[in-house]
Image (tube, rainbow, N blue to C red; front, top):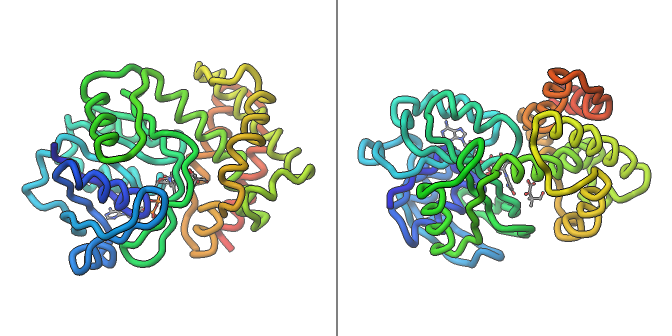
Length: 303
Ligand SMILES: NC(=O)C1=CN([C@@H]2O[C@H](COP(=O)(O)OP(=O)(O)OC[C@H]3O[C@@H](n4cnc5c(N)ncnc54)[C@H](O)[C@@H]3O)[C@@H](O)[C@H]2O)C=CC1
Ligand SMILES: CC(C)(CO)C(=O)C(=O)O
């Protein structure tokens, strides 16, 4: 099996490293990471195992990698469109997988190929240096599914390959459910954690939780209008799951949005609460809490 990871950073390089044990892998990464992988290999620590992995890595895509079985997009959502454009002549008609957060990545990829696989990953990847990543937490297996729905041999084979590589992964026939479920989590925690400069655990404070509750209620209404069937009957049932299951597992985590703001980078807000507000508008749904948090993040982005 031949796999290419496009926009390989914390998630993409680590997934590439794991897959390189069972497949031929090339990662397209920024120069400093590509140089480090070529010089001394990729360093991994944490719950996915420890050690140095060597695999093909460069800033471009050598000709030998133009016929891969899967192209995994692992850039930030803000980079999906640009990376698809950059490799448009390669990915057309190929299996392209999104292993990213948020709503909208698969729709962008679908403009470049008719073979889109949606992905959901809820594992923590932290940079420790150039081409060096610590895998900190994992709340559930990776989910993969044909986008927008269904499953097939290509999806099942990739999930099986990931499992063979030691990554917990499952194929699903309803990937939009998993993507929206993960987006609820990110919408509830990422921007508020970033604005308040606190780890996720602090958001159970009753004042913060009031805001989290309203963000989730609005997002659930939008998911329903989008005909996404969430695994929870009510927003309250999800909020209980968030508070008792997901939050304890990631309580010490600082939102990646906080990092993006600190480094002066554009955040993924347009693919999280921003996507919720855009869809709310489309369906004539009021979403004032999501609108407010989007504006706060955009304000911070421009400071
Ligand atoms: N880091 C984490 O713990 C988790 C991240 N995610 C999601 O996964 C996605 C990726 O996140 P990270 O790996 O943390 O981001 P990252 O910023 O570490 O990695 C993306 C990398 O792609 C590179 N890139 C973008 N365009 C490129 C191009 N044209 N050519 C070469 N390199 C290019 C960027 O420079 C960056 O190094 C995001 O949607 C994120 O929200 C999901 C679960 C956990
Ligand atoms: C790192 C982790 C597990 C928790 O925030 C995550 O999946 C995310 O930020 O999207």
